[in-house]
Each structure stands twice: as structure tokens, then as C-alpha cells.
Image (cartoon, rainbow, N blue to C red; front, side, top):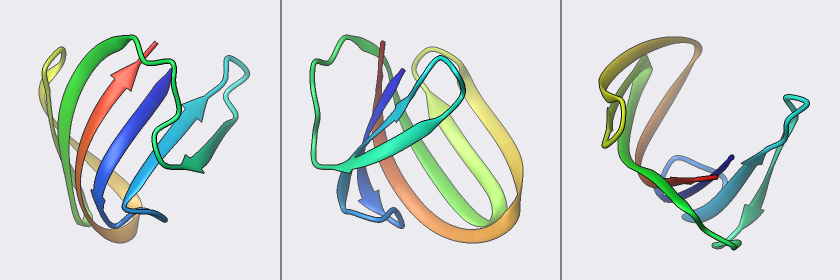
Length: 78
């Protein structure tokens, strides 16, 4: 699965994060294709709370162990 993200709080303003089947992941600067649209999402991370509005999964709230501040628009791709 790939996640193309644009926003504040990640390593780069525009990045692609790729998750491999073995559970490992890596990120690259910019948009890396190919892209097969799975969903579109907004993610807001304030302190340890992450609020996600996803076109496939709806609204979700998650708790994380570390504190971050992020505002992200993203596209998930298969």
C-alpha cells in the first residue's frame, strides 16, 4: 500500500510512504507512482490524538504514544 501525503508535520511537505507486505515501510520525497486510487483522507494529529476522515472508512480517532502536530491531505493507493 502507498500513501501519498501533502501537508505539514511530515519529513517533507510532499511525500510517498510505501508499506511492504512484511510490515516494513519506507518514505520518499515527492510523489512516486504508479498510483491506483484506494481512498482519499484528511488526517489531523494533535498531541497524542489522531483524527482521520477517510473516503472509504469514514471518521476514525486513534491514540498514539508520541506527541505530534500534523495536518495532512492524503491518497492511499494499492
